Each structure stands twice: as structure tokens, then as C-alpha cells.
Image 1: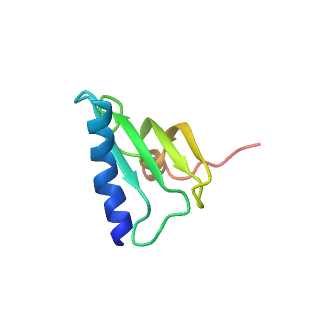
Image 2 (image 1 turned 120 degrees about the vertical axis):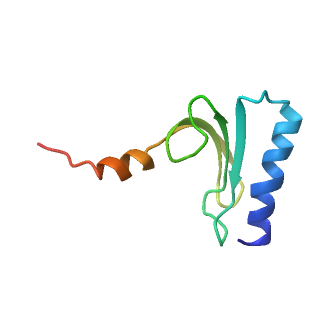
Length: 93
């Protein structure tokens, strides 16, 4: 993992938790890439009763434009766990 990616994954969540004084029920994760810089860096806030991963459940996430000219707050839904369990969906007509 590159130095900036590692800093983003470690420092950013701790800073957000400290500055917002989030209760224990919430966790924060961030990623600027895994090995190289991501096209869409993100910071997600999870309610631990729902999910603690971008793989499943729903969560709030800040998505950054690649050139950092904008940031978007989004409510996302992870489906990777369902895709792994049930496979890719096929539409029937």
C-alpha cells in the first residue's frame, strides 16, 4: 500500500471520529486505493448495527472526484456479499 493510501486509511477515520465525537455504534473507514491511487477515493461512515463494510448493507459515504474538484455525499448499498452468495443476476424477458 502506498504511503498516501495508508495515511488516508488510518489518519482520516481517526480524525473524523475524534472531531465528530461519534458514539461507539459508528465506525469510519476510508480508502484512497489499494496499492495505487484510486479513481474515486472515499470515506464511509457505518452504523455497526447495519454493516461495518462496503461489501454489504447500506452506509453513508463521501465520494471524491479523481482530481478532488468535488465531493459527494451518497447513501450506498453494498452487494458484494449477495453477489458472492447468489451469483450475478440475469434479467429475464
